[in-house]
Amino acid sequence: MDGRNSGAMPHGIELAPLAPPANLTAELVRRLAAEIRAGRLKPGDRLPTEQALMRQAGVSRTVVREAVAALRAEGLVLTRQGVGAFVADPSGRGQVRIDPGEMRSLQDVLQVIELRIALETEAAGLAAERRDAEALQRVQQAAADFDAAVEAGEAAVTQDLDFHRAIFAATGNSFFPRFLEFLGPMLIPRQTVRPPLEDPEARTAYLRRVREEHARITAAITAANAAAARDAMRRHLSASRDRYAGLAGRLEALDAAASASGR
Image 1 (cartoon, one colour):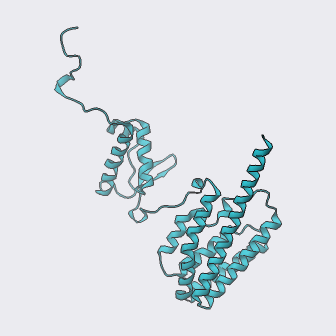
Image 2: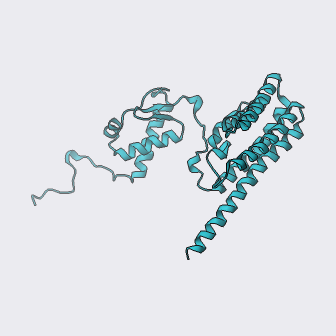
Image 3: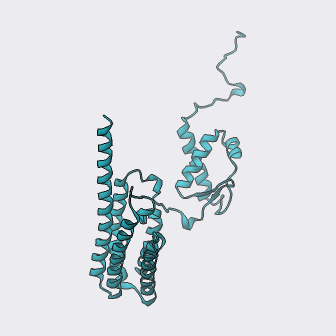
């Protein structure tokens, strides 16, 4: 030993203990968010590259990626595959949506339908009360397009979505269409949840029932009958809920049978 304090730092500086990795991520998020909110990083600006952020902040690639993911979740940045991360437009911030990848069970789907019943029932009533001639024509045309798609043997997912979108728009409340974006693909669960062993005839029969339900909703909105529109929408979505509840029961029975046979 040369007598010097081996624990002393050169040049008289002292470093505080490093924070846990999770805190490093949170701190990087805080600093970048502050730059964005202060306007030093403006909408459309590209964030520094991973390498630049690693060098400037003195953190690992993992910390940088976790921080960018957190900023994306907050709606502060958008990422483009192979290009980088960019500051988001403030008008689009705060939006959330249900990711179908998060729907891990039919119970999740049933909860989303329950949410739809609560909000879309009222949307149908408001559409009946407030629709003008143009909005009514869009609802009627969307219903007709759905009918044509079903008769053509199509899944009619796009047309189904358009029907509900037209009703949301007919409310005259700009926040109802935003609810559509919140739900994302889960507005029409059959595009992400496919019943096992469902034959084409059964699917067509189901879609024809949906067509009849749409017709009742459309008739009520056309008649400006808010109570009937709410009732028709509630019945429509309740039928969808019952369908998926039945599917959940059948799948549970199949799982139980498979477990029993494996013993």
